[in-house]
Length: 286
Ligand SMILES: [Zn+2]
Image (cartoon, rainbow, N blue to C red):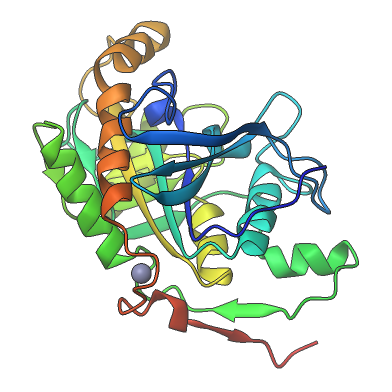
């Protein structure tokens, strides 16, 4: 199995850039190594790409590290495997992305939300990378963390600028993401009672545990949430899955990838003045 390289920046792909061929085929990107599967205590990872843009090296893994063989549910989940690699690589800046459903009546398909808050409705996800590692017999300190400022303000600002630069019509600078367990979509009553009525703006499925694990390893994290459809019962009941997602791939996935790349180019991997790395500590409990 290949050795994990020392890299400070990572992009975790999601449905928002599927089919865009990110990062290959984008101007200024050089592929250092492609299709690299790393060994982890949780099993082998999805294939990573080690690349650089304008001399800045980064690691990329598509679709949250989920494959036909690797699920997003614990144990041995995609995120546990991906973040073991990011921990060993000593990654400090992470960009994520996903398609989401709107649960706020003001949001339309094609809108971008760079969130500043989230509510976790998942039930089957790993909650602590360091505890998962201990269960595998790896001798690590158990890390506790606060979720004050869960999304890095500096990286979020870069994603906002990137989305505006590449031509998204409406880019929202704040918003609350509800994270659903899935894999099914929600009923109209669930959208109303669990999301809309309590002030959640969009719903997606794989923000957790990425946002948690990033904090746990001391890295900054921000995400681009691209609205692909209305939450069930919110407005329009006529959309059909295959059509809406096909249209999205064609119209929006490449611009979303370009927005990520724009942000990536502007990252200063050494700048931790945002304070994200400080909201964690070794637990005093066994
Ligand atoms: Zn930060």
